[in-house]
Length: 114
Image 1 (spheres, one colour):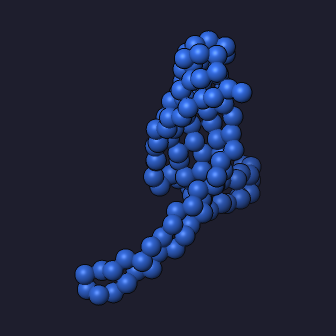
Image 2 (cartoon, rainbow, N blue to C red):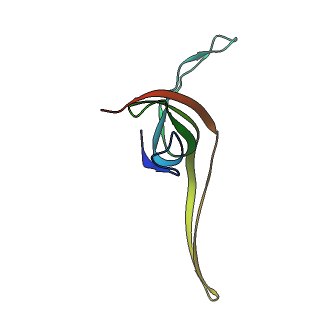
């Protein structure tokens, strides 16, 4: 579930490139796994904050019909901790985290203008 912004570069042309950025959440669905030694590992559903960057093009065959091609890369983020410190030389705040996996997708669609 993402919300974002798309910016077209050459609006109104037959070939319209665009860039996109979104922020939101991603759900990783866990599943139970049967190990060879007959023990079970139960997976958990995990929600993570995520951002995506993408780009693509809208290709118009006529004024009302076109094709949209897009590629995106999604980065789910995890936060490991935060710290606040004070001292004689000043103070600071730090947050640690990372990106456990990068995911990509390619999509295409039909554009029908009404």
